[in-house]
Amino acid sequence: MVDVRSDIVLATINAGYAHCSLALRSLRAQLGPFREQSSLLEFHGQPDADRVARTILECHPRVCALGVYIWNAALIPDVIVRLKLARPDLVVLVGGPEVSYGTAHLRLLTSPDVIVAGEGELVIRMLVERALAGHTLPRHVEAPSPQWEQLQDPEPEYTAEDLAHRVIYVESSRGCPYSCEYCLSCLSPGVRYRPEDRVRQAWGELLGRGARRIKVVDRTFNADPRRAARLLKFLAAHLPPDGCVQVEMVPQRFHAELMDAVAAFRPGALRVEVGIQTYNSEVARRIRRPAFDAVADGFIRALRERGAVVHADLIAGLPGETPDSFAAGFDRLVRLEPDELQLNILKHLPGAPIARHAAEWGLQFDPHPPYAVLETRTWSREAMAAVHRMSRYWDLLYNRGRFRRSLSLLWSVAGGSPFHATIALSEALFEELGRTHAIAPEEIARVILRHLTERLGCSREIVLERLRDDFRAAGVKLPRWLRTL
Image (tube, rainbow, N blue to C red; front, side, top):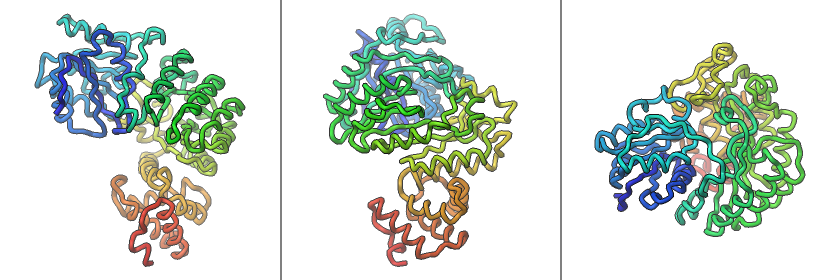
């Protein structure tokens, strides 16, 4: 039960408990005299729509604002229907990227009272004030992009529990200098930098209050390498001994000041997401993304040499990319040994101009979230489905670090291509297990053993030893069958 009554509820469904909603906190910080009448409610995962609606209604709100994202777009409409059935007088506002660029794909056209497109900070107070006063509200609001001097800082809205147990999301800029067509940032190009002294003060106060895990959500943190270096050095100097920071960077030519700042962190305390996306320069130009292939490898090596944890991204299914060209890029990236390699599938985010390539390149997307590509002119539906499955198994095999020694053996005996060898193993896993989720490591280990010995002719003893090494490295007890074989 919720033990607080609030006239205003700001709510959303996050991907998981560890994630905090920066957007809700930024909205609450702008409410001025109405802030004390408001509450934040965050749910996570795939909660029951009835439970979400009941929890909101227990606050007895007069206004409810909901954040809609790709991971909750299928659930939020059901929540709204339940809210309005129970409380027809409740004013429901929706905002977020899923409703900012057209809502024809959602069951949201008739449910909420107001749809806010864009960054909502400059309109939230006006909408709340009018709603509480009983005034008529506009059906659709195009919110202007705020300048930083117009905004109150959201960092004070994080609670002690947030700081102790969750990832704290912060920003030092908005926008992106690039125009990659799969990303919504390309719709408003350019970067708005938050004043650096203000960033230092806000982040310093967070760290002083006990923040341990910080994620900077800037689309391109190193758009200005010198500014990024200064902020990284500040974070490194103030981070607690068990703290960590995550930022997203694009590959750049070696920048000494930036790399010196990376090295200022203790090993493993800085996590850098590096957006490669494609090594195919022709494909990169087609989607208006800079071709980073010439500098990507050196950038990743430099980060790893300085103790950063590297999370590298690739996207399968870009217009004109073929399975062979993607495999070549995947293999190239694997050989750099990033700590994580995120195998993403191209998605058509509502409003993103990647759709302009649909006719020429035969792009067909799932109409439901997360809007993943199903096939292209150069990638059959069957081949793309196999990559979908591989992307899910890849997290279990590589990104969680559970079977890297076994994967290394697989790649060495299967012909040298990590991509082709892993996709074959993925198909074996799917054939035997029939699912891509809720899989115990022991189940995966059994399939790896059979695949390497029966299909690839590898020595049973060698495979068993690699599997034992994997379990020991993960710090978990060996399954009984693996101890006795």
